[in-house]
Length: 139
Image (cartoon, rainbow, N blue to C red; front, top):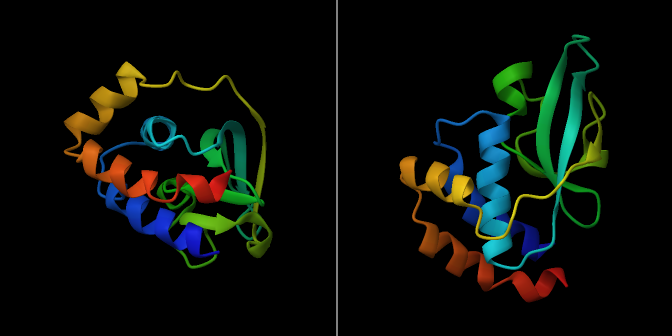
């Protein structure tokens, strides 16, 4: 799981961005695509089992081995410890349910993803370089 720790370190730099789930998912997909890291863009809903709150639509990234990338679940479901944040194994979060389907992926070198990253002050080249160091671990 070391590759996920490295991925987490690279993507945690995005947490400050002023983006909701759709924009954040688009930027993450843009960066993963530039680094040739396989992923799927998901759309659906997320539900807190404890509060019965459901957010729909919600977008997130799915990685191999049941791993999810979602930096905006807490934006909508609350900042509690029972709500996942960042990169995590979906099976470790019993109080949250993701339900959705894979949607059409964003294009490689997505111009909108680039604009969103740029306007949020993301050092695209640095993050892609960090991600490129681990891309072979995802194949």
